[in-house]
Image 1 (tube, rainbow over the protein chains, first blue to last red):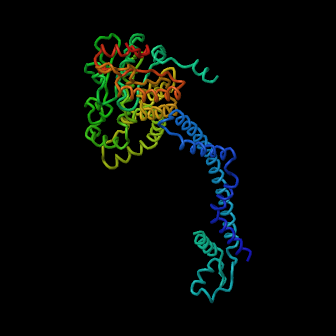
Image 2 (cartoon, each protein chain N blue to C red; image 1 turned 180 degrees about the vertical axis):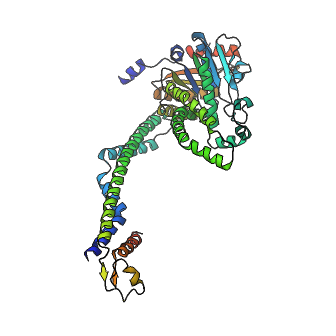
Length: 160
Length: 337
């Protein structure tokens, strides 16, 4: 039963990994206060710009436009650096978890290959039960290999 | 208090600063259509010819305006302007592309290239502006080799100018990537072409040309971004759209790190024309008022620029003598007689 739940858990983590990573990095790499301030300023300027007549007060219009351009550059720069940091952390985190996950599952599959995950299936899944119990050799058992396979597909379907 | 300080540092309303800056090598004169770029660039070239050793004025406008302005036919190679010892002019059509290049340009290359010139034209057509840019590079090579003390570019009235100016940095990055790719993929392509049975496409010739271009382009890039060597003179008229375009141009130039600190406002009604009956012309007075409004805006917005005002004359400025006379207004603010 232990293997049963362990495998299910790890497969679930593997499938949900992108979402977990996204959620946690969103939390860590929140929009900074400074960036928020700059965005506010930008919105204010945009409102101001809408009220200026370009024809009558071109100098004022152009100066406001220039300020907006500068702020926009700053926003882009800040956002870009945040995005870059986040992407690299996301990637590293994802790969690490995937490796650990994979290692654990392989270890389990190899060491538990003769142990049944579940028993008592002969009546339900005939004629498949012979195939399902393949590495274990025990009748009516579900081997870890096929349990992995089932979990994999189940999790994928769940995510969709 | 603030306005006093501003007035005190108001910059001289002439292009003397450009003429006197002897380190300048590349001067671009540009602005959206019909503002008098060619008149201004020719006038500027005339003034430069008085103080610099040799001056070349190049036009990339397919409409061949310099020939009109100096009343002389110019070609793809520098020719001396009649009436001057050290002023040369040249007109290049940047849309020449591969097809119209003379045969000897392809000398030494395999038949494959010659036969497929049409194909190459298609390929290059896929990258808008690339054939312009390539002929531009050829021009730069030529011009650098000839060692003029200063080159004035009379740019075309389209957005191409800015793209071409920004081109060196774009191409530098692109070319270096391309060249790296070439060294990786080159041998592979040669193998494949051998397999298919084609005689070696000889990508080397093309990539050699690219390799040749890269250092020139890097040099150009460096020079264009150096405010001691390059500057851009914006020409406009005192109307809203021209002003708007000028502002856009100035912003794009500063984004590309190209120096600009001169604006010429052309076609201004500086005289107060009188009708035959002695009254002031109503239409001209109204236009003058409109222009005055925009002139104020210009003075306000471009306080760190030299703003030169040029008059609208009752004659076209054509021919060497008229250009020479007109060019005086660049250094001495116009006063009606």
